[in-house]
Image (cartoon, rainbow, N blue to C red; front, side, top):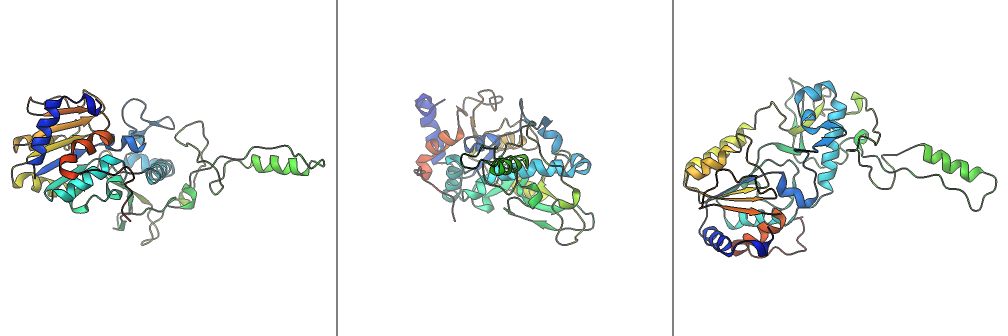
Length: 330
């Protein structure tokens, strides 16, 4: 659904309700960051080097092969840092500044909402962040937030394209040709110049990294560091859940925004019905017409398309324009 294909009555009714909405809750998923170019690793094709991405996101996988798991997350950190927040991220950040009682609950770990300037007090990270790290030692409570070092340790640098052997046009001794061949045979070098290799492709070789070269806790000097994301089988952050539950229970909710998520996974999905119980009308923004459709009433809205295009336009009556050249706050 492009903007000019949104039925006029839907656009007008959403605008009217948005303008009188103050207590707003948003639930965001991977579709929010789609137009930033980040892979979702979900659903069909959700593979990384022939591994189901979900199989790498477990404590058991980290215990069995911490190097492989760190290579997966280092790749995701690198991709996220090289992506830019899209207009939808900036639109939500601006709505948060316009509506102090607007709370965003995001399932994304890519850090793009934070980089768009979304107020931290109004942004709750359900699944943690790629840029948070913590020690795995039972006896150590070291944790660090917003570590944007890339690579986090030298061994996890993304390999670069290697040079190709070239014949010399000036030397007839063979020395330059031999040197060119030798340099090419060294293969991809993490520290070299050139284009990043796509190590999500199983056809691209990656090094076997010794455990001693993986991120190590600076406090206890013994425990391995791990990404500060919530893995399958782990509890969601208690502080986050408590804050969101308190917001929902405090008073009537005017509007629930469901952005780029199927809203099928609990407990996040339960907030949609909880908000509806608290009086909210629901607006779904999704590329898939079927995602989020279940349970919608005639009082709700389903906007089919890219959130990066739809949100800035549909929120404009409250937030104003999002300039095309909007950049991350310094």
